[in-house]
Length: 434
Ligand SMILES: Cc1cc2nc3c(=O)[nH]c(=O)nc-3n(C[C@H](O)[C@H](O)[C@H](O)COP(=O)(O)OP(=O)(O)OC[C@H]3O[C@@H](n4cnc5c(N)ncnc54)[C@H](O)[C@@H]3O)c2cc1C
Image (cartoon, protein in one colour):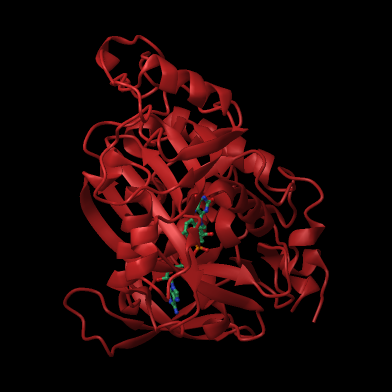
């Protein structure tokens, strides 16, 4: 089904009616960069995001938000990491979507009984711990370590490589630490705030949003049929839009619109916790052996778990657990089934290694679908082989990191017919697998 890229490219001066199907981070950044393309003018071109449920209602609103120069694929990562930094600078991302650099580490722990409190330096008298001035500097956030640790426990933890200011993982639980990234090559955003901000910024330059579910895509006539659920309109109202360019950014739902696209899905649960005190800026890839009492009460559960924990600005912590394939992909993001017991598992796991999380307030229990390219690799970004029909989906676990890079190259594909911002992007070409 391959045709040359140039059949999809066209001259930027011609009038373009662009429809982006899907309002996750990929649709949002694509709309943003189209509205910032030098050839774009709102009086000549139109850009419409068609979103079934709500902007960032899928994985893009429920992801961790880690950005890393060591992510994949290498053709997109450096561009996207740089664009994140530039977008934050231009639009006050630090305050608007929590952009900040942070440390990342892999931590090995033996979980404590959930009811146990944090008594450090077992067997030694824990006295004067609040007087010890180790690692007490302010973090990038302005958060200050409460300096809970004794000198001895600091020495032991330093030996295993644990940073001084990572004092919200219990010293009793930590067994080993390896840094995976520093403030130079890792950063984070709040994915929901970032995605919705991108859409707002695109709207400021003329992009439109329609809340409606695409029910059919005709790749020959380039028409999109959708059922509208806008306020005041009956749910069943069906409309059709004609377009010069259609960009599919529907994540895990992409095969429901274009069945030949080999994108699968994995459900993942996550929780958001307000910790009992502000915590320093770290993303942790954990490996936790659960305590004996947990094993006795949860015989069917794995006893070795690997939740990811991301401290976020504004006194918030996000944690996610393992994925599952227990329920099929629902019709829309509004129908995603949240299994409360899987959320509770994540809360229990992180509680075994952190008093601050155990004693915090759970703000959200949620689930979403990760889009996965079944033929391996991913994402798929570029022409589909149908003239004027484009694909930007299958971003696996790095869609937040790679959102701006994807949006930028999609804007060049559509407006210029070729990409100049990134090199060696042949591996992203959807026509390889369609
Ligand atoms: C638990 C978890 C943690 C993650 N953490 C990170 C991280 O730390 N860093 C990172 O870089 N990435 C992370 N990711 C990956 C990232 O979330 C995804 O790669 C990214 O959100 C995919 O974005 P998307 O826009 O392609 O898809 P989605 O966010 O799923 O958006 C697709 C949109 O399309 C809409 N849609 C679907 N069907 C239709 C239709 N028929 N008509 C109209 N609209 C439709 C949906 O409603 C949805 O809003 C994580 C993912 C998970 C699951």
